[in-house]
Length: 430
Picture 1: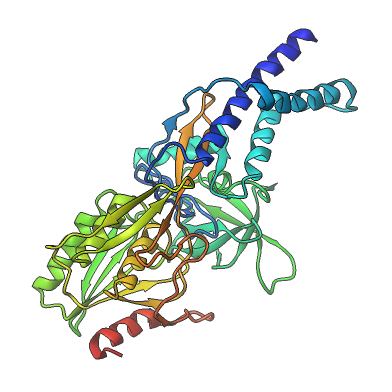
Picture 2: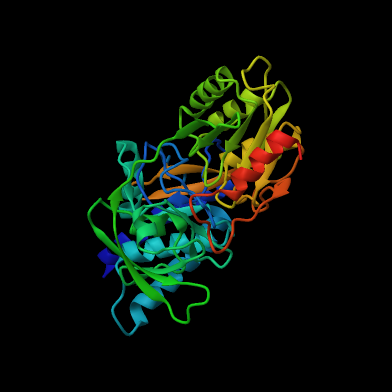
């Protein structure tokens, strides 16, 4: 019995280190410039997305996790307060009628409980197995069900979009569907990252989702076969009416270079204006958001990054880029998050572009990831972003200048009313 208690004390002492580290970062120490929104349920190029009703494809936005650095054990008042945990667990051990969970389960539950007190869905603990699945992005694989997801205001995983023709689309999933369970196991109350980790998996394997849908009396199950998905980072098109269209799917490590080449290509073909389509773009690298914004701005602030202790970093544009004078409209919707909102907010505040479409997602916080000793991962929110006009992005999003809701009944024949309105504005100025 004494040996068992010694082991438990050792494990819980390790937990106390995690608590202190979390508090340290909540107070503002440490920095990293990462962008994360929600996630496409898939694996992709070395980064993992995050989010809240995040429309982010799983697999975009977070660099490899840094290693957790040990910190001193608690002393003084903190140690005395934490002793209460020992007291409770000792009483449970000696008095509980029933089978006790193993110490790993207890430790993980304690960590989640601690993080829940912060009131921030992006500061989260990810167990080793889902953490490993999310880390597979670094392999360059891209496998999943092809859906944009995020946590809604009720803490339930919600579909915010699907890949046209992808597994989720063919299985009948719709925007607004809520996922209650994965393979018979409830995901209510788990973090976004863990929910994504449970849904993702190798191509060719099946996953069964319990879906709750507005207007349908009872939840129903949908079984989907995961696939390898190929989605380009950027599409460039010159229309017959002389308007160029650039659609950026994510802010990858080469997004700035690709957008610049796209603008050069369209201008060389005589484009009268450009529609920059950021719909369903979940974000990616911060520096790429700054670089893309700079392509269209000749000077001025692009964004402010602020920490809880009052520190601030300002990112600014510089003259001499290829897209500074081209007439510009930016398409956005509820799937435009994080880096997309940085670019759209900067261009809107500087009156450089008109935003057309729907209200954006509202993901404006920075997470720093840490790999823990057992392969699990801790992600901590360390800063927030603000537009040049000092507007908060986080949980607020951006309102379009010209609102064009997507028809609830969908569209036929591949028409795109939001794109049509953006083109109309470029051609008429109205």
